[in-house]
Length: 382
Ligand SMILES: *Cc1c(COP(=O)(O)O)cnc(C)c1O
Image (cartoon, rainbow, N blue to C red; front, side):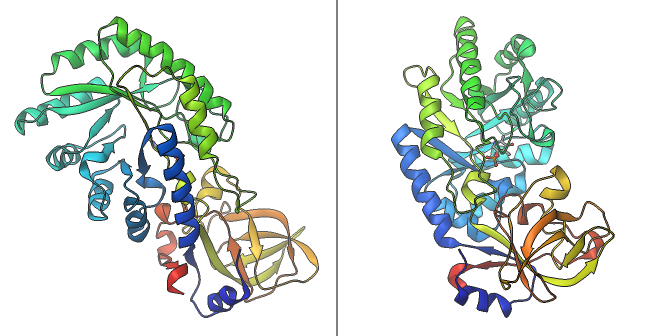
């Protein structure tokens, strides 16, 4: 993936930094656009995966909508060219100010998670003299077979409305004059690699459709959320958008006039990003060698937060294979990118690439230990 020319240029850039391959991102978006049109999906990019301004602008240029979980994300999305009328607002804890701002901006829809939330949105909709479109986020009770911190559709999850509460929610919604129910929304988890999980979701959606019909509640929008995984072992592999969309279309019984929406995040931006770092020291441990690099969990928290695995490459050595624990400088034992992996013999100054870091990398950066935020470098600016 990285030619010698690019690697030479990396040598002159202070590390760590996020490297974004614009061509790869555009290829992914071309593929996504083609498959979404073919299968009739309306898409809202999940901004939380990566809110870098340039990335947002590239994605908005494809005409997709945005899925936001804060007013700041909505604001950033609009500034980057997303049409407010294609923005959905999700999240279990929307603040008053966020709700007011989003109503004023005229977003497409609020994905609602509870009766108290609907009541507050209605209160502000009345004040603004607007009718606000809402979709109900339903917890479909599906095990996404992903890490427990990124599974969201199980009984103990804070997300979504449980099906046994739906009757009460629908009754309350019908009594709130400034809210209009437009559909149902789901999001069962992230980094889902077993497509059968989405097939199970389809069965739940069909059952729920019947239930809403029986209550004479019309649903225009079926929103399946995000969650399509990427292959962290093979950073060159593109996500299986075609298979994913066709499976959903095959197993969801859409009614005439219904629209199907999805909110991919990781699958759009994951593979185009790489965290580039330099080796500071090789330190001998009791039973391993530590390759201490200048990137840490503040730049990419996924391994520390949910034991995520990223492919790691030494771009500047072709020495004999040696085992290393690749660790960052942050004062936490969890600041470890990989344990006991094989790299070509590694020395101070070598350039280390942590692959597939485009999603939930830069977006989750922090200044813990008062570290600097790593900058973004784009392939077409090198
Ligand atoms: C996080 C999230 C997404 C995107 O998930 P990915 O796994 O990045 O595709 C979509 N919708 C909602 C509601 C989310 O919370």
